[in-house]
Amino acid sequence: MNYELTGKLTEKFEAIQRTEKFKVREFIVEEVRQAGASTFTNVIKFQLNNDRCSLIDNIEKGSEIKVHFN
Image (cartoon, rainbow, N blue to C red; front, side, top):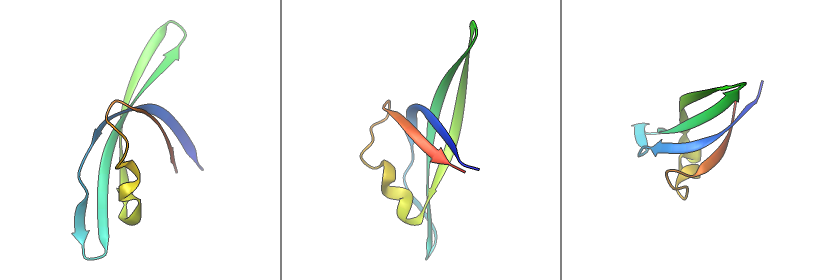
């Protein structure tokens, strides 16, 4: 099942080489949702792997982004 989230990029970390063939990079997105009169904030950490680690290189912190994940 695929999901989509739109939020603000609050943090992006440097890529970490775990093994010779495996690299990871984490980033944090803050999502704000309205439910009636209430506002909820979700802070979600995502992880990119290998060749996808460069996907957020040109995105500045504070930018609104859309993340597709499963």
